[in-house]
Image (tube, rainbow, N blue to C red; front, top):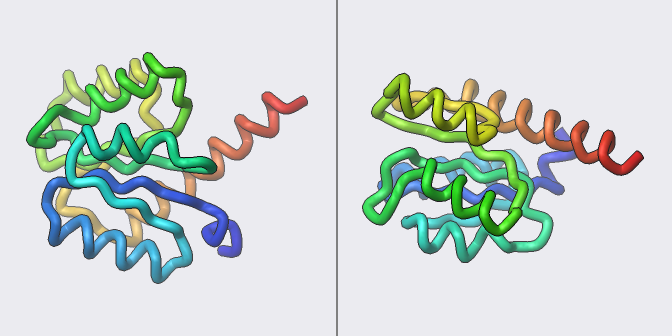
Length: 134
């Protein structure tokens, strides 16, 4: 997919081995990947120009992906978010939906499904941008 070359993803995951592994796979598929090991670091990187998507682990040592989404909304940063988690709690899923999460994926992650969800969110977001430009 040639659009991947233009897509910049912020990957927030506190498990360094998993984060590096997923980042390596995404880079091999021509995505540009920024890595964050904490919510604080992710917030700092969320202001990167032309950031297209955030993939965020739900539970981080310093906050949650929900907390990240709330902080981004407060500062009017409108970036689609995919939440990944080993803790598939229904209430958290509903709260994420209310905040406009693009997708929600349970661990362990199957890379093909992960990549499909990323492509789907990127496509949805590009369609939204085209609608808002007219």
